Amino acid sequence: MKNEQELKSMVKERYARIAEQGKAENASSCCGATTSSNKVYNIMMDDYSETNGYIEEADLGLGCGLPTQYAKIEKGDTVIDLGSGAGNDCFVARHETGSEGKVIGIDFTPIMIQKARINAEKLGHNNVEFREGDIDAMPVSDNVADVIVSNCVLNLVPDKQKVIGEIYRVLKPGGHFSVSDIVLEGNLPDALREDAEMYAGCVAGAIQKTKYLQLIEDKGFQNIKIQKEKPIIVPDDILGKYLSKEAVNSFNKGGTGIFSITVYAEKPGSKQEKQKLGLSEIQSEPCCAPESGCC
Image 1 (cartoon, one colour):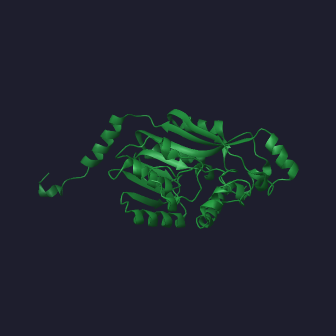
Image 2 (image 1 turned 30 degrees about the vertical axis):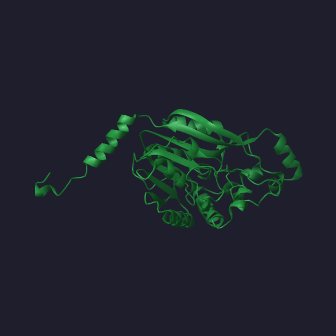
Image 3 (image 1 turned 120 degrees about the horizontal axis):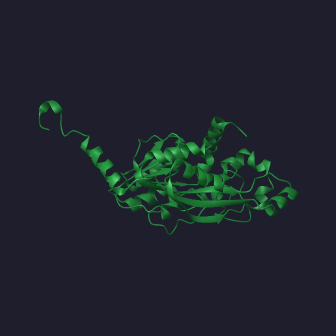
């Protein structure tokens, strides 16, 4: 497998192409990166169509859950979406946080940022913005977000521990996250684990579920819980591109599980601390120039 920088470059290049594909093509493959299956329609994604705030033009069919449904977003919250794509989860989050809140989408693929900004402008959502950058080095200050969401993205980042550290840094004390992602139980065959398409397809970059949860706990998050879990079945016609027929049969019977999980966790702190933090930010801005004497 490639080194960290090569993996990032590969994912960025492939997701620039995926951004131009149709939703049906993305949904019937592994995150748009592999060939499409003839046997199923949606391999990973959940149906957003009945979700408040859903905008079909912003849904590229690349998710593996509905994190905003479980994120406990309140009116006035500041929400950050990691790997925001064309803006789908940001617009759902904006419905929950309202015009008095703020939503920030972060993505490192320029064409995704462009698509998302066009969608936001069409909708007139002036409190939704999109920033280009890596989610393991977020272009956001400390203690900014009340809530962080992400949909099938952390598995694409080589250093997941670093991303979790960034989530902790950017959340306010008492803030929380709800993240949908792909995890494993058991080991993938080498041919899948080492393939670039399967990495971009959200499978080869996934780690063991126990390790994933341990990384969250080790960072200091509390009240960690799995809000939803579902198995991901990769169809045989896709597996057959990477494995022999015998290897496909062995994989299907071998006990390796690929799962989408939606994980919730809280940064230690209280709502009072969050409110004090917001108040101190307001008070730190002088009402006028100090030399004028009006303050």
